[in-house]
Image 1 (spheres, rainbow, N blue to C red):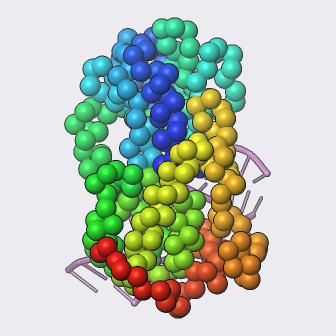
Image 2 (cartoon, rainbow, N blue to C red; image 1 turned 60 degrees about the horizontal axis):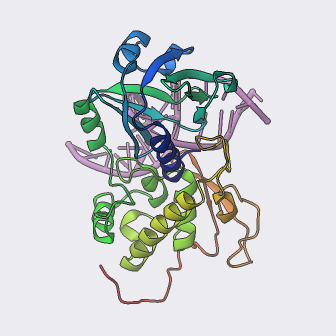
Image 3 (spheres, rainbow, N blue to C red; image 1 turned 90 degrees about the vertical axis):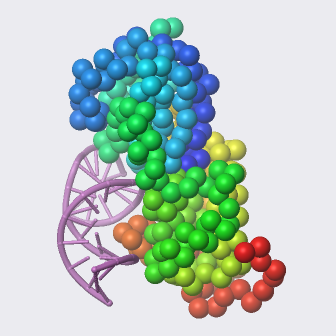
Length: 286
DNA sequence: CGCAGTGTTTTTGC
DNA sequence: AGCAAAAACACTGC
Protein backbone atom coordinates (compact mmCIF):
# COMPACT_ATOMS: atom_id res chain seq x y z
CA UNK A 1 0.00 0.00 0.00
CA UNK A 2 1.18 3.46 -0.68
CA UNK A 3 2.80 4.97 2.40
CA UNK A 4 5.21 7.89 2.63
CA UNK A 5 7.94 6.56 0.28
CA UNK A 6 5.45 5.36 -2.33
CA UNK A 7 3.43 8.60 -2.29
CA UNK A 8 6.69 10.57 -2.40
CA UNK A 9 7.84 8.60 -5.44
CA UNK A 10 4.57 9.21 -7.31
CA UNK A 11 4.46 12.89 -6.35
CA UNK A 12 8.01 13.48 -7.60
CA UNK A 13 7.25 11.73 -10.90
CA UNK A 14 4.04 13.69 -11.39
CA UNK A 15 5.72 16.95 -10.50
CA UNK A 16 8.40 16.32 -13.08
CA UNK A 17 5.93 15.46 -15.84
CA UNK A 18 2.95 17.70 -15.07
CA UNK A 19 4.39 20.94 -13.70
CA UNK A 20 3.33 23.79 -16.01
CA UNK A 21 0.93 21.63 -18.02
CA UNK A 22 -2.59 22.84 -18.66
CA UNK A 23 -5.57 20.62 -17.86
CA UNK A 24 -8.02 20.69 -20.78
CA UNK A 25 -10.62 18.19 -19.57
CA UNK A 26 -11.65 15.95 -16.67
CA UNK A 27 -13.81 12.88 -17.03
CA UNK A 28 -15.34 11.21 -14.01
CA UNK A 29 -16.90 7.77 -14.38
CA UNK A 30 -17.40 7.11 -10.64
CA UNK A 31 -18.70 10.35 -9.08
CA UNK A 32 -18.56 9.20 -5.45
CA UNK A 33 -14.77 8.90 -5.63
CA UNK A 34 -14.59 12.69 -5.99
CA UNK A 35 -15.59 14.59 -2.85
CA UNK A 36 -17.01 17.56 -4.76
CA UNK A 37 -19.53 17.56 -7.61
CA UNK A 38 -18.26 16.84 -11.12
CA UNK A 39 -19.28 20.36 -12.19
CA UNK A 40 -17.37 21.94 -9.32
CA UNK A 41 -14.20 19.99 -10.05
CA UNK A 42 -14.44 20.71 -13.75
CA UNK A 43 -15.00 24.41 -13.13
CA UNK A 44 -12.01 24.62 -10.80
CA UNK A 45 -9.45 22.67 -12.82
CA UNK A 46 -10.21 22.86 -16.55
CA UNK A 47 -8.07 25.55 -18.15
CA UNK A 48 -5.72 25.65 -15.13
CA UNK A 49 -2.01 25.03 -15.26
CA UNK A 50 -0.46 22.77 -12.64
CA UNK A 51 1.88 24.81 -10.46
CA UNK A 52 3.46 21.81 -8.76
CA UNK A 53 2.78 18.36 -7.35
CA UNK A 54 4.02 17.40 -3.90
CA UNK A 55 3.36 15.10 -0.95
CA UNK A 56 2.06 15.78 2.56
CA UNK A 57 1.53 12.76 4.84
CA UNK A 58 0.09 10.17 2.45
CA UNK A 59 -1.61 12.75 0.23
CA UNK A 60 -0.62 13.68 -3.30
CA UNK A 61 -1.24 17.43 -3.62
CA UNK A 62 -1.75 19.00 -7.05
CA UNK A 63 -1.51 22.77 -6.78
CA UNK A 64 -3.25 24.88 -9.43
CA UNK A 65 -2.74 28.42 -10.69
CA UNK A 66 -5.95 29.66 -9.09
CA UNK A 67 -4.67 28.74 -5.61
CA UNK A 68 -6.88 25.66 -5.29
CA UNK A 69 -5.33 22.24 -4.76
CA UNK A 70 -6.55 18.79 -5.66
CA UNK A 71 -5.63 16.22 -3.04
CA UNK A 72 -5.53 12.52 -3.82
CA UNK A 73 -5.55 9.80 -1.17
CA UNK A 74 -4.60 6.40 -2.58
CA UNK A 75 -5.56 4.43 0.55
CA UNK A 76 -4.54 0.79 -0.14
CA UNK A 77 -5.08 0.18 -3.83
CA UNK A 78 -5.24 3.63 -5.44
CA UNK A 79 -2.94 4.42 -8.36
CA UNK A 80 -2.11 7.59 -10.28
CA UNK A 81 -0.87 6.66 -13.73
CA UNK A 82 0.67 8.82 -16.43
CA UNK A 83 -0.38 7.85 -19.96
CA UNK A 84 0.33 8.98 -23.48
CA UNK A 85 -2.90 7.63 -24.84
CA UNK A 86 -6.39 7.33 -23.44
CA UNK A 87 -6.49 3.74 -24.71
CA UNK A 88 -3.95 2.81 -22.02
CA UNK A 89 -6.74 3.03 -19.44
CA UNK A 90 -7.50 -0.34 -17.83
CA UNK A 91 -10.32 -1.41 -15.54
CA UNK A 92 -11.07 0.52 -12.35
CA UNK A 93 -10.01 3.87 -13.84
CA UNK A 94 -12.54 6.27 -12.35
CA UNK A 95 -11.16 9.70 -13.22
CA UNK A 96 -9.17 10.84 -16.27
CA UNK A 97 -7.40 14.19 -16.60
CA UNK A 98 -6.54 15.34 -20.13
CA UNK A 99 -3.61 17.69 -20.73
CA UNK A 100 -2.98 20.18 -23.49
CA UNK A 101 -0.23 18.02 -25.01
CA UNK A 102 -2.61 15.08 -25.44
CA UNK A 103 -1.30 13.11 -22.45
CA UNK A 104 -3.43 11.89 -19.56
CA UNK A 105 -3.45 11.15 -15.86
CA UNK A 106 -5.58 8.23 -14.66
CA UNK A 107 -6.91 7.72 -11.17
CA UNK A 108 -7.32 3.97 -10.77
CA UNK A 109 -8.76 2.54 -7.52
CA UNK A 110 -9.86 -1.08 -7.28
CA UNK A 111 -11.38 -0.88 -3.79
CA UNK A 112 -12.82 2.61 -4.19
CA UNK A 113 -11.56 3.70 -0.75
CA UNK A 114 -9.28 6.37 -2.15
CA UNK A 115 -10.59 9.77 -3.14
CA UNK A 116 -9.94 13.06 -4.86
CA UNK A 117 -10.93 16.30 -3.14
CA UNK A 118 -10.70 19.94 -4.11
CA UNK A 119 -9.55 22.39 -1.45
CA UNK A 120 -8.96 26.12 -1.24
CA UNK A 121 -5.57 27.27 0.04
CA UNK A 122 -7.15 27.99 3.44
CA UNK A 123 -8.82 24.57 3.63
CA UNK A 124 -5.56 22.90 2.67
CA UNK A 125 -3.66 24.73 5.41
CA UNK A 126 -6.33 23.73 7.91
CA UNK A 127 -6.05 20.09 6.88
CA UNK A 128 -2.25 20.11 7.10
CA UNK A 129 -2.39 21.44 10.66
CA UNK A 130 -4.04 18.22 11.79
CA UNK A 131 -1.11 16.07 10.73
CA UNK A 132 1.83 15.19 12.93
CA UNK A 133 5.39 16.07 11.88
CA UNK A 134 6.89 14.90 8.59
CA UNK A 135 9.56 12.34 9.57
CA UNK A 136 11.92 13.51 6.82
CA UNK A 137 11.70 17.21 7.63
CA UNK A 138 14.87 18.81 8.94
CA UNK A 139 13.10 20.09 12.04
CA UNK A 140 11.89 16.64 13.14
CA UNK A 141 14.45 15.81 15.81
CA UNK A 142 14.82 12.95 18.33
CA UNK A 143 13.95 15.52 21.00
CA UNK A 144 10.63 16.32 19.32
CA UNK A 145 9.96 12.62 18.86
CA UNK A 146 10.55 12.02 22.56
CA UNK A 147 8.31 14.92 23.54
CA UNK A 148 5.47 13.60 21.41
CA UNK A 149 5.92 10.11 22.87
CA UNK A 150 5.63 11.55 26.37
CA UNK A 151 2.35 13.17 25.39
CA UNK A 152 0.96 9.73 24.54
CA UNK A 153 2.62 7.71 27.28
CA UNK A 154 -0.04 5.02 27.63
CA UNK A 155 -0.35 4.30 23.89
CA UNK A 156 1.17 1.18 22.44
CA UNK A 157 4.05 2.17 20.23
CA UNK A 158 3.03 0.34 17.05
CA UNK A 159 -0.53 1.75 16.74
CA UNK A 160 0.89 5.14 17.74
CA UNK A 161 3.33 5.12 14.80
CA UNK A 162 0.33 4.55 12.52
CA UNK A 163 -1.59 7.55 13.89
CA UNK A 164 -1.33 10.35 11.28
CA UNK A 165 -1.79 12.94 14.00
CA UNK A 166 1.24 11.57 15.81
CA UNK A 167 3.55 11.18 12.81
CA UNK A 168 2.68 11.75 9.15
CA UNK A 169 3.08 9.17 6.43
CA UNK A 170 4.01 6.02 8.38
CA UNK A 171 1.95 2.97 7.45
CA UNK A 172 1.86 -0.66 8.47
CA UNK A 173 4.95 -1.72 6.53
CA UNK A 174 7.37 0.89 7.86
CA UNK A 175 5.97 0.81 11.42
CA UNK A 176 6.60 -2.94 11.63
CA UNK A 177 10.00 -2.78 9.97
CA UNK A 178 11.30 0.17 12.02
CA UNK A 179 10.30 -1.52 15.30
CA UNK A 180 12.09 -4.70 14.21
CA UNK A 181 15.33 -2.92 13.39
CA UNK A 182 15.09 -0.93 16.62
CA UNK A 183 14.52 -4.17 18.58
CA UNK A 184 11.35 -2.84 20.20
CA UNK A 185 8.28 -4.96 20.92
CA UNK A 186 5.25 -3.42 19.16
CA UNK A 187 3.06 -3.73 22.27
CA UNK A 188 5.36 -1.63 24.46
CA UNK A 189 3.88 1.62 25.71
CA UNK A 190 5.33 4.92 24.57
CA UNK A 191 6.31 5.76 28.14
CA UNK A 192 8.32 2.55 28.56
CA UNK A 193 10.86 3.40 25.85
CA UNK A 194 14.32 4.37 27.03
CA UNK A 195 16.18 7.32 25.51
CA UNK A 196 18.38 4.86 23.64
CA UNK A 197 15.37 3.07 22.21
CA UNK A 198 13.73 6.34 21.18
CA UNK A 199 16.88 7.43 19.38
CA UNK A 200 17.24 4.06 17.69
CA UNK A 201 13.60 4.01 16.56
CA UNK A 202 13.92 7.56 15.26
CA UNK A 203 17.01 6.60 13.26
CA UNK A 204 15.44 3.45 11.83
CA UNK A 205 12.25 5.25 10.76
CA UNK A 206 14.28 7.80 8.82
CA UNK A 207 16.73 5.27 7.42
CA UNK A 208 13.98 2.97 6.12
CA UNK A 209 11.89 5.78 4.62
CA UNK A 210 14.92 7.22 2.80
CA UNK A 211 16.03 3.80 1.59
CA UNK A 212 12.55 3.02 0.29
CA UNK A 213 12.29 6.34 -1.57
CA UNK A 214 15.64 5.51 -3.16
CA UNK A 215 14.34 2.18 -4.48
CA UNK A 216 10.95 3.69 -5.45
CA UNK A 217 8.85 2.13 -2.74
CA UNK A 218 7.51 -1.22 -1.69
CA UNK A 219 5.34 -3.32 -4.01
CA UNK A 220 4.58 -6.08 -1.52
CA UNK A 221 0.92 -5.42 -2.41
CA UNK A 222 -0.60 -3.55 -5.37
CA UNK A 223 1.57 -0.46 -5.40
CA UNK A 224 3.02 0.79 -8.67
CA UNK A 225 4.51 4.19 -9.44
CA UNK A 226 3.16 6.77 -11.93
CA UNK A 227 4.66 4.72 -14.77
CA UNK A 228 3.07 1.47 -13.60
CA UNK A 229 6.40 0.18 -12.32
CA UNK A 230 6.94 -1.71 -9.09
CA UNK A 231 9.33 -0.61 -6.36
CA UNK A 232 12.23 -2.66 -5.00
CA UNK A 233 11.80 -2.25 -1.25
CA UNK A 234 10.19 -5.65 -0.90
CA UNK A 235 13.57 -7.36 -0.73
CA UNK A 236 14.49 -5.35 2.36
CA UNK A 237 11.46 -6.54 4.34
CA UNK A 238 12.31 -8.53 7.48
CA UNK A 239 8.98 -8.95 9.28
CA UNK A 240 6.06 -7.50 7.31
CA UNK A 241 3.83 -10.44 6.30
CA UNK A 242 6.66 -12.85 7.10
CA UNK A 243 4.89 -14.62 9.95
CA UNK A 244 6.01 -18.24 10.24
CA UNK A 245 9.43 -17.54 8.73
CA UNK A 246 12.59 -17.85 10.80
CA UNK A 247 13.95 -14.44 11.85
CA UNK A 248 16.91 -13.49 9.68
CA UNK A 249 18.62 -11.77 12.59
CA UNK A 250 18.56 -14.33 15.42
CA UNK A 251 17.91 -17.45 13.29
CA UNK A 252 16.06 -18.84 16.32
CA UNK A 253 12.45 -17.76 16.49
CA UNK A 254 9.70 -17.53 13.90
CA UNK A 255 8.21 -14.17 13.03
CA UNK A 256 4.91 -13.82 14.85
CA UNK A 257 1.70 -12.08 13.80
CA UNK A 258 -0.61 -10.43 16.30
CA UNK A 259 -3.31 -7.78 15.95
CA UNK A 260 -2.80 -4.36 17.51
CA UNK A 261 -5.23 -1.53 16.96
CA UNK A 262 -7.00 -3.74 14.45
CA UNK A 263 -3.94 -4.01 12.23
CA UNK A 264 -1.71 -6.94 11.47
CA UNK A 265 1.50 -6.62 13.49
CA UNK A 266 4.64 -8.62 12.73
CA UNK A 267 7.66 -9.05 14.98
CA UNK A 268 10.36 -11.42 16.18
CA UNK A 269 9.62 -12.62 19.76
CA UNK A 270 13.37 -13.06 20.31
CA UNK A 271 14.77 -9.82 18.87
CA UNK A 272 11.81 -7.74 20.03
CA UNK A 273 11.29 -9.30 23.44
CA UNK A 274 8.73 -7.45 25.56
CA UNK A 275 10.57 -7.93 28.81
CA UNK A 276 14.27 -7.90 28.17
CA UNK A 277 15.62 -4.51 27.19
CA UNK A 278 18.95 -4.04 25.44
CA UNK A 279 21.56 -4.12 28.19
CA UNK A 280 23.91 -1.79 26.37
CA UNK A 281 23.64 1.69 27.82
CA UNK A 282 25.48 4.15 25.61
CA UNK A 283 25.67 7.90 25.83
CA UNK A 284 22.38 9.38 24.75
CA UNK A 285 21.78 12.55 22.84
CA UNK A 286 18.55 13.10 24.71
C1' DC B 1 -17.37 -16.62 3.87
C1' DG B 2 -14.38 -13.37 5.89
C1' DC B 3 -10.22 -11.00 6.12
C1' DA B 4 -6.89 -7.34 4.46
C1' DG B 5 -6.00 -2.54 4.63
C1' DT B 6 -6.35 3.49 5.63
C1' DG B 7 -8.05 6.73 8.34
C1' DT B 8 -12.02 8.94 10.36
C1' DT B 9 -15.71 8.55 13.55
C1' DT B 10 -18.19 6.35 17.19
C1' DT B 11 -18.47 3.41 21.12
C1' DT B 12 -16.64 0.97 24.94
C1' DG B 13 -13.61 0.48 28.77
C1' DC B 14 -10.27 1.45 32.16
C1' DA C 1 -13.35 12.87 33.50
C1' DG C 2 -10.09 11.84 30.25
C1' DC C 3 -7.45 8.94 27.96
C1' DA C 4 -6.80 4.90 24.92
C1' DA C 5 -8.48 0.83 22.70
C1' DA C 6 -11.73 -1.29 19.90
C1' DA C 7 -15.25 -1.35 16.55
C1' DA C 8 -17.75 0.37 12.66
C1' DC C 9 -17.54 2.17 8.24
C1' DA C 10 -16.41 3.22 3.43
C1' DC C 11 -15.05 -1.18 -0.61
C1' DT C 12 -13.39 -5.30 -3.73
C1' DG C 13 -10.53 -9.31 -4.54
C1' DC C 14 -8.95 -13.52 -3.22
